[in-house]
Length: 193
Image (cartoon, rainbow, N blue to C red; front, top):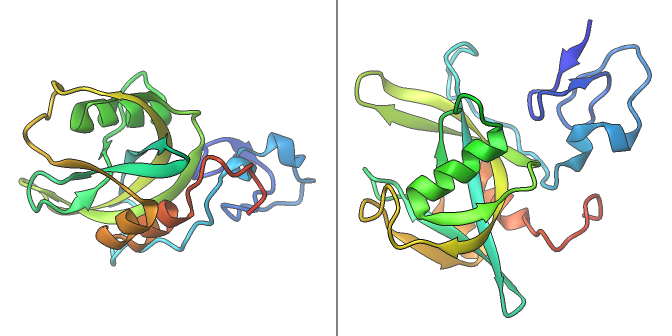
C-alpha cells in the first residue's frame, strides 16, 4: 500500500526524513518532498499523550535580512507572555503554508509569503479553557516578511520583536523549535548543511 509522509503528506516509497520504507525502489531525490526539508528534525515529545490525542497546528517562522544579518520575528503568547512563533489550527481550503502565513498576519501583522516547504515539526502543550492541556504538533513554514502592519487582528494582545536566531532559540521553551530557529538560514542552499 502507499504511504503518506507525516511531514509533507506526499505519497512516498522510501523517505529518509520521516522513516517510511517499503520494498519498492526509492523516489529520485528530486521527487521526494522530504528531501526539501532544510532543518535536521529532533525527535518529538508527546508527553505521554496517545496518538489520537495529538492536534496539528501550522506555524510561521517569520524572517528578514537586515544589512546582511538574518533576523526572526518572535511574538509573545497572550496568556503566559512566553516568546513563541505565530501558529494556529488548519484552515479549510488553505494549504498548511498558507495557514501559517494567515496566522502570521493575524498574530503579528506580517505581510509576507512562504515557499511552502516545511522546515520541521515541534511539539508543545496548548492550554484550552474547556479541554485543559492539548498535546500539539506544529509544522513550521518559513515566511519572508515584506512588511509589518500596525493594525492587525491581534494588535495590542501580543508583543512582537525582531531578534537573532540564537537569541530566539534561547527564549523559546520547546527544544525542537529552538533547533529549528538555530539551524534556519534561507541563504543556505538546500542539502548543503
